[in-house]
Image (cartoon, rainbow, N blue to C red):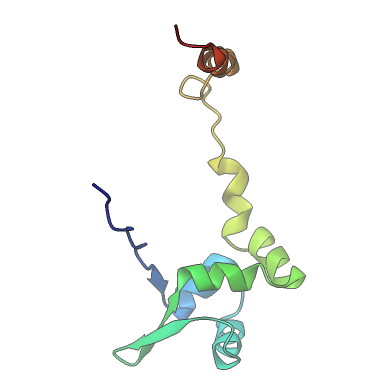
Length: 106
């Protein structure tokens, strides 16, 4: 039985939230909305920006990428990497599993 393709949950943020997350001025985001570079909806008179659209826009120009990495959420990316090897897959275990997969079945 096939399952219908699951749709992604759309995450939306306000202009001020987007500005804080991406390290830019709210006016910069307003300008991008005006230029049609960011997807949004209006809820109760307030802009709600599609987060995925905001991420794509933030990676579209070098200056924006730099702001995200220096003042926005990008400055924390290295902290997200797994430092606890206890729960990381062992390279030996992964290699062993791959070798087992290649053995022909009797």
